[in-house]
Length: 317
Image (cartoon, rainbow, N blue to C red; front, side, top):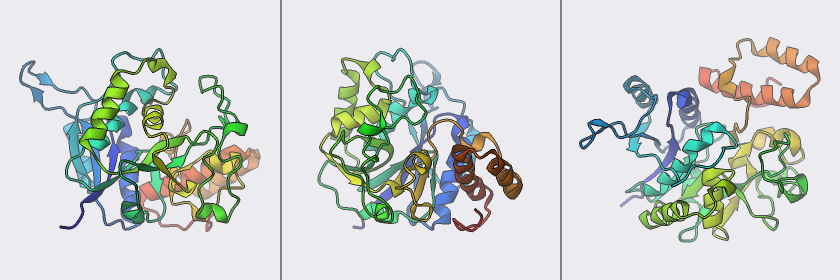
């Protein structure tokens, strides 16, 4: 029997809708052969309370629009720790615990979880066939430089503790992951894994019994890094190219090598539509702000995929 494989993402509110649509369109654009499963809150009626099992701003029309993108829907219940953290680094992190549900998907031999704020630029179907030891996952090193100097990030997130500081220089960077000898800490935006009820139960028990929830700055990511310490295979940055790498680790980044962009932090592309690509690019270039220029270039990729405008990296800028 042929193995069953799929992409998986999580959408909890209708504010996620536009980014989910672009992720789905990007996968179709690179001609993936695998379906995209969208986990969403279960709004079916609880018989005992006569109320929806989960509250969400997603409407029936929103879910229908997701299906119209060619996605498969899977209703799930959210996951929360038994006590809420005092504060979240980013507000949307309160829903990210629920990403652990990806291990609870039945009937699949391999899935690749993708955060909804990603843009697949080149085909990455081969991740479905990568060799993984039993109960391991595949992921990409996180950048722990804290380039924007956010006060609520871990204090040891400084350039000297970041694996990319001593990482490979292009063009080797296309095929070689950075070293993991430092902290060996991965970003949970892209996860290559085999679903497992046992692993899901272990992760849930670990979360529900965690002695210090406030220490988990990056909810699901910190949980996974604790539970999979020494049990993950590092992938090259091109599979989870966190956009800040383009400026803070410019020697590693190569536009044409990137396969999957991750739009982390503020300044999300869907927050401000790009209408006149050439004029707006000329305007931002005049500022001389290299981070703003880089942000515009990456955001323009997102808008072109969202709008169905064909392009090749390097042609426009």
